[in-house]
Structures are given as C-alpha cells and as structure tokens.
Amino acid sequence: QVQLVESGGGLVQAGGSLRLSCAVSGRTISYASMGWFRQAPGKQREFVAAINWSGRNTNIANSVKGRFTISSDNAKNTVYLQMVSLQPEDTAVYYCATGLQIVPSARGDLYDYWGQGTQVTVSS
Image (tube, rainbow, N blue to C red; front, side):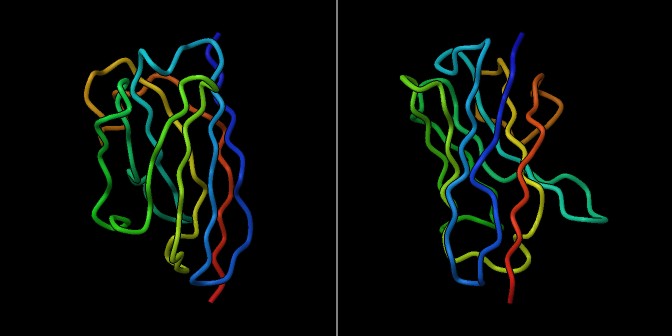
C-alpha cells in the first residue's frame, strides 16, 4: 500500500522559511512523479510544484516561482519543498502526491496517492 507522510509545517512569520518533507512508502519515487499542492480555507486546491522520476525536471507554479524549490532524495524515498520568503497568502494545508506520469504535471487528477497534509501558517 502506498503511503505519503508530510512533515515540516508550522507557524512562521512573513519573510521566514520552512522545509516540508514527504516520506513515501510502498512506491519508489525514482519511478514516479511527485507533486506538492496546497489548499487554503475557502479556496480550491492549487498546484505548487512537481518533480519527475529522474529528479531533473521540475514544474513550479508562477505564484511561488523564485521562492519555492522542490527536490527529491531517492535514497530516502523522500521529496522536499523548500519555501523561503513566505507570505501570509502562502497559508494553507500542503499536500504531497505521487503519480506514475512521466512529466511533473500540475494536474491533480494524474496523481493517484495523496498524503494527509501539513498546515503552514504565515503570520503578517
């Protein structure tokens, strides 16, 4: 059974940084694409970043480009989301997801397993 467990969320002041981790079991991430999505209260789920199986191709949402970086550690079967210069509008529950597509897609429907999410709150 595939399981994803996110960690690293918390409360941070505007301008601060956080690194989210997503530990995967039941699927080797070197054969999958991994994505991060977020959902703020009252809003639809939003794509944040994705990385493909090779770790060489990434896709970053325009809203976070230049501030967020996605990376993977195949030895640890873990994906990371490094977030810097956080702003209050980044406040959301952040979800990790895995899919078998080749490209690091922004389409949530292509991901077949999701984590339970980790809360990120940015205070002004």
